[in-house]
Image 1 (tube, rainbow, N blue to C red):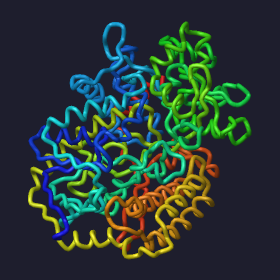
Image 2 (image 1 turned 180 degrees about the vertical axis):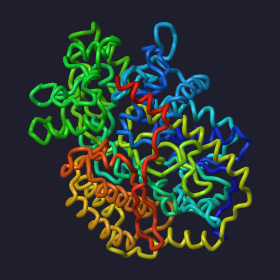
Image 3 (image 1 turned 90 degrees about the vertical axis):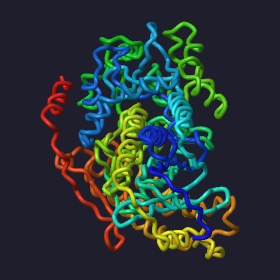
Image 4 (image 1 turned 135 degrees about the vertical axis):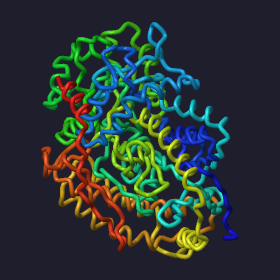
Length: 605
């Protein structure tokens, strides 16, 4: 314990993206002493990759929009696997959270009469995404960060949490280490909010940056919390495919919202070939109608490029698999074609999509105002995560809360674009408020010195095996290849069972990983510690995917390509068993209240 620095807070927030910052602000507003831990630097959050906008039914572009339509769109997009209470709260509260962000200094694009402008996005019936060009996530982080630093929040940058510390059945704190020097810290607290983001680094091709190693999900699981819906992984249809060094980097859906179209190597706009029956009456049946929709014609239906992400990703993969892909294994996303429709189209594209223009010019030497982009599916988001209460965001472990991508429930089987940013605001605020209330009502949690000593010893154990032949990078690369190839966009039982067998082998090898050198500036050690989280969550994804013998949302089974109504009745929930094994349970989905069921029926017409 003499090696360990002690820090005390009422509420500790782990993760400084949109959800973490909003939770910290909300907790601090109650008068709680708040600590904010981030794995990287403050401002270096995956939230900035959410470029297109935040979904909120404000009705500024189309006054037919309201929370009821947004709720129905979210439930339909999620294949009705959503936590309906979260979908209801999200649809109702998102407009206030956007207006609040504006009051704190966010500079949104505006309508002609000065209101916040909203754009089209996949799966949304009306233009609903409040945006700042194609830099919306960056503006959100800038605004929340500027607001948060004046709230008296203690920020701990470049610190990684390795263990949740318990007092009986409740959370009492965390053990973490400073990434530069490798020095351990114990944070004692009354409540913890996990806002650690996603799991993308478990896959080879991903839009996620290096931090996204499933830390929050694995920490919660090891502490006894339940995970839910882990089979539902979203593959964003449009990531960069060239050059190889940037493969997977996101190309915002805003490109398609502004009129961009998808074409195969034959120049055909292939998305018209495969429109799901339940979206047919909302989808344009001609290129002309689709164009009018993107230009704000309220009588037009949306183009097929703006169908849900899982569907678009599978259509792209089909074109590639059947030999109609681009030279580098993708398809073409063409926004340059709008020069046929708009005077000064090059200036228009640069104004509406400045980040995309610079991204392709700088990274691929491609001018998107004249040349189509090569894009393909990339692991982007996980709908599953820590099972939480819809109102409070508390997990099944007392004092442990979760918000944002690491929490399950809102998005069901598939997330609609733009719902992620408003999710961060709505449920980040709720998690912070309820965590502060829990800490105030349940004081006196204590951290066990023996638990800390055991966790420190476990974290340092790779140094004791410095001569081992097992290297962390090699295992991580093998894991990423395994998940990409066998538990990726299209899944089969035989392949996933092979993956599960291989995962057991990787877990055994990971226990023998050795690292050389010392604790200071040692990325090999950091990777060794991340491995346990990645392996745990990869197993959870594969087990849940084997259990769900149907195709629904982000989960597509080649051996069970259709939906099965029996599987629509439950979520797959998992927890750590008493013997350390992963236990699965089919948990019935609570029935919709009559009022909400009526809204869904009303919106189907």
